[in-house]
Every structure is written in structure tokens, then in C-alpha cells.
Amino acid sequence: MIKVRGLTKSFDGRPVLKGISLDMGECETVVILGPSGQGKTVLIKTMIRLLEPDSGQVFYQNRDIFTLSKKEFRRVQENMAFVFQANALFDFLNVRDNLSLYLHMHKKMSQAEIATRVQAAIQFVGLDPSTLEKFPEALSGGMQKRVAIARAILQEPRVIFYDEPTVGLDEGNVEKVIDLIELLKKQVCATSVIVTHDISLMKRVADRVALVRHGEVVFTGTKEEVSDDMLRRLYSTGVDDEQ
Ligand SMILES: Nc1ncnc2c1ncn2[C@@H]1O[C@H](COP(=O)(O)OP(=O)(O)OP(=O)(O)O)[C@@H](O)[C@H]1O
Ligand SMILES: [Mg+2]
Image 1 (spheres, rainbow, N blue to C red):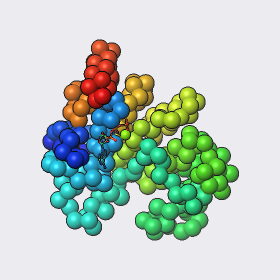
Image 2: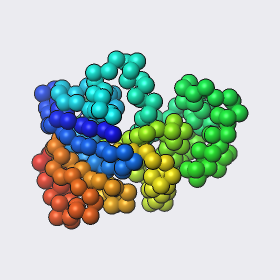
Image 3: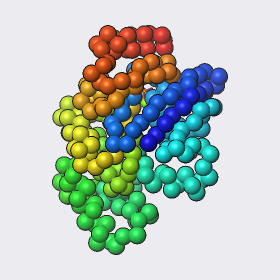
Image 4: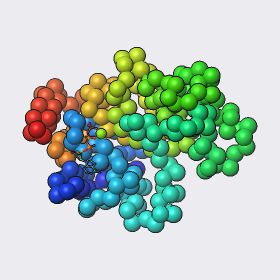
């Protein structure tokens, strides 16, 4: 479904991605795990063409997304949803409008149908329907995250990209977000690409794992193949060398 080949990216002469290659299959949950500051966000932003790589390709269903025109890429983009680290909800819109916006802009649907879908999505993520009338600032971080996931689901994407979906959440909300990722995996066959430094998240949801250190993929395999020793090395050298 998605193939990443030899991605490199430097900022101010400092290499952040050093030739990343990865495959993500249909309906697969791929967790890209690594310590802080290793280029995970840069990688995910490059995969969705928010950043241009210095070299390398990202193939979406065998088409290199960087060779597509803006118009062609927009069509590809309709199959992709993002749950950003900071959720990226619009502060000036209530939750209902945050959730409806994409459907209004991209789908030919009646107001009534949009309202029904929005209602279903908010229930799917376990939030009370009264949340729809609230503004993002009135919600906790965990609730905002669930709204961001509801917004992603409403797009009916083929791929969902998550950047650190559990960061900054308390234990209860971490559990809810993990449950949601698992529920989504069972109910819709979307490919999930999750970048995180959260080992327990990886152990819960991953079908496949890529370990990233210093801008390179140092291991890919199933979560069962990831040993404690690999994780120790990933986190110790990763962070120490950076400083
Ligand atoms: N737009 C940019 N301009 C300059 N440097 C950048 C830019 N974006 C990222 N970097 C640098 O690239 C490196 C990797 O950043 P990135 O945000 O991808 O790390 P990360 O693995 O996502 O870390 P975290 O776990 O903290 O989110 C950092 O040193 C960062 O300062
Ligand atoms: Mg990041």
C-alpha cells in the first residue's frame, strides 16, 4: 500500500532522515518506534507530503506521491487521515463544526446525513453527544485526542497516520486511545501508521514494528521479534548520542 524508499532529509546541513525505507501493507498497523528527536515527525510529515525529502520516494499504491501534480495528490490525500500530536482542531469551531467541516467540503452529503454521521462518530470514540456543542479549549487533552480520531474516521480513509497518539495523556485516556486504535483495526480495514516513543503502545497495537534511531531504520519485524535488549539499546544510545 505504502512504500518508502531511501528517504533523506537534512535541516541546516544536519541529516535527520538518512535513507529510510519501509513497507506498509493494506490493513496493517505499523508502529515506527524511536526515542525523542530521532526524526519520527519529519518522517511522517514526509510520507504525507507536508515536507519534501532531499532524496528518496514515497509510493502510495505504486505511485510516487512527489511526482504527482497538486491536483492528483489531492485525490490521493482523500484516502489519508492524520491524527497530529497537537490534534490540530480549529479553536474557533465547536466540536460539531470541527467534525462536519471535512464532509461539507469533500462529500456531497445532505445536512441531515452529515449530522447523523457526526453523531455516530462521536459515539464511536466514546464521547457524550453534548460534547458536539463544546469548543476544543473546554475539553481535556484526552477528549481532544478522541475528537481528532473521530474526525479521522469520518473521512473513511484507507490510511490513518498518528503522531504520538498517547503523549501527554493520563493512563485512563491512554487506555481509551489504545482501545480505539484496536477497535478501528477490527472494524475498518485501514492501514494505520503510528509514530511514537511509547513502547507499551507498540506492544499493544503493532502488527509490524520499525525501530528508528538516528534517522535510520535499525530493525523491522513483528512486535514479538522485538527483544527487551533491542529496546534497551534503542533508547540508551539513541538519547545519549543525541546530547
Ligand atoms: N522544520 C524544521 N527545521 C529545522 N529543524 C527541524 C525541522 N523539523 C524538525 N527538525 C529537527 O529534526 C530533528 C527531528 O525532529 P522530529 O520532530 O522529527 O523528532 P521526533 O522523533 O518526532 O521527536 P519527538 O519524539 O520529540 O516528537 C530535530 O532535531 C528537530 O529539531
Ligand atoms: Mg515528533
